[in-house]
Length: 473
Ligand code: HEM
Image (cartoon, rainbow, N blue to C red; front, side, top):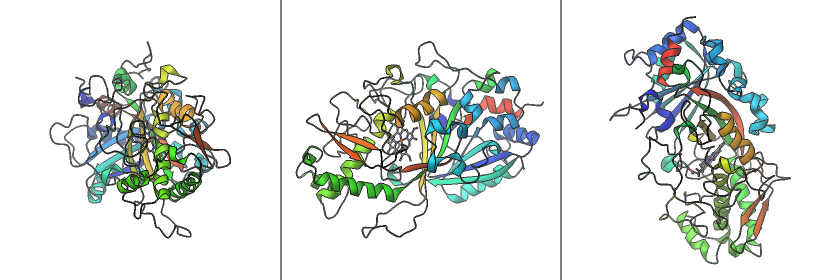
């Protein structure tokens, strides 16, 4: 088995038991002090500085967990040798704001509209993440992290996990993660998908792209077992989303083929599962639309296994897509992970997998039956981390070719992801597949998710942190 002790704990394992998460967005105040801070953070001795949580925490997971990511500017500020810096991939060197067009960060998502501290990307050097059981612990770790004046706090973002793994828009999340060779037991984590080679997430290991390994920035201690993270502040228009479900359900209600997406009487079961009182066909159709957009009912049931009803008894992880699948080609989870389904870029079926670590921010939303008109809603969204060995070949390719553009299947090419895509109501469309083989086309989808900040970071191994802490030049 692979030794997890050299990895940061948030790469392959995550901390689902810690509901409170805070991101500290930091600038290196003093190179020499910052190096000492890094060395102290992995020393295992100097508890005045929060200790980096490794992937091997033995039997007792720490009560608070602490991890870091460095931007290219951060590596530079630490004095990483130029010959090493030049070996990092181009998209990481350029930084997330330079990649805006590829990522669909235009209009309301454009980097020049991002609030502080993301409006000064060159000053963002290090993003530290604290995971805790309560806010008091977050405060305490934050204070220890900043105590030595190694780092200047530019800003922070905070989120907390909702019960039952739900995220804004009401979906259950955290169901799928890639499983890795040498790490996961295929019997225990059976999802019908091939185990991903370690090189999908860690530098220095084989990938499933034949004969290809990503370049490991040298010295080996720096690059080996490192990975990259796209940190994204994704604002969600929760009211707009619910309003769209209303509108689409009303349109469907009068559609001649509506019984093909909701069998007569099916509204009773759908409303029972989602505890909707009184049950109605319109309320159930809202859930049907939500299910088709994501590829899962909001309780997590995959449409690929149960398209007529949500069903708590079906396996949420193990399914595949074939030509007869009732999961739309354009649904969020089918776009992000086509599994064994036929796609244009056949070689990419399993090579773009991402480790996802996300936490909602903003208060949970409760729909007010009297309508939300005129109310000012607090900002809500997702603090997302999309982790993989190549930002370009995984996160960016997924965002550009699949979520937007829809290049994986000619039947969706030219349409964007219905949940996270850069949609414009004037041109957007989404097809619901029917049992009879036809489709019902929904139109007028607005942009439900807009980007409000982000950074590309390198998640160094513990050896790399030790190396960076020992730099002298
Ligand atoms: C606020 C924005 C987003 C929301 C609300 C959202 C929601 C969801 C939900 C509900 C699931 C299903 C749960 C699961 O399978 O674990 C999911 C899966 C997934 N999402 Fe997103 N997502 C968002 C943004 C993104 C972005 C930007 C990406 C990638 C660039 C992405 C990539 C994925 C992937 C890879 C999966 C797993 C699919 C699978 O393996 O079947 N998501 N997302």
